[in-house]
Image (cartoon, rainbow, N blue to C red):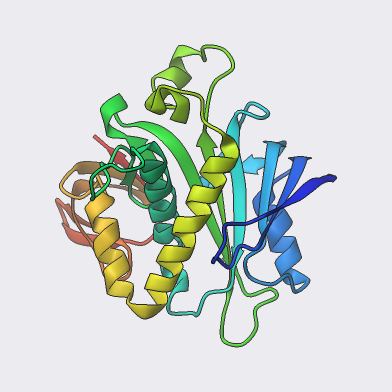
Length: 267
């Protein structure tokens, strides 16, 4: 891994510098290792290609070099805020994408062209709820100080395909250029996402309830029948609400259950 360049982050954010590397195993792994060595909050790693990218539930993440936004951020939130980071990550990406796609002087609120499947898959409703971005937030106490813990949040957002993908991918994945109908600069996406990350991190420290309310307004899962793969098995039922903890409340045949981790498949 070699550093290609270091770019300034968006003004007014804790993300003062963005380190760009041509290739690495995993940007999350890079920042978790850096955090253990004392790297301060706000470090950002962007790469053109990951050789060992990871998704939730131990899945691998595959990308076409240069055609995705592959980025991880290092945070050191208070313990009370840390459980919200996966939801904040989803808010940052959806709001970043929606504002990037909106007309400069368009109406408020910005149209919700990207939305969330619990906990933080970014889907495109107008493209059949195909997936635009996957997010993996990982917490650790290694390198933690002052009552805060380390959370690294990694995002893989499809910007374009260099050639038509296989049908099995085309049916599940969307790209930002497909949604925008025009070329999109990856660095514009990076700046937009980091700007909204800052906004929601500040909001979370002031009022976690406000963050949860905003998340609920962007979440497609509530009210849907879902099948949930958890560490202990499969649950099926109707997603009834997002709890104050950020977990998903599901009404199953055996009664209500609140799930704090897993993948909710809309069925």
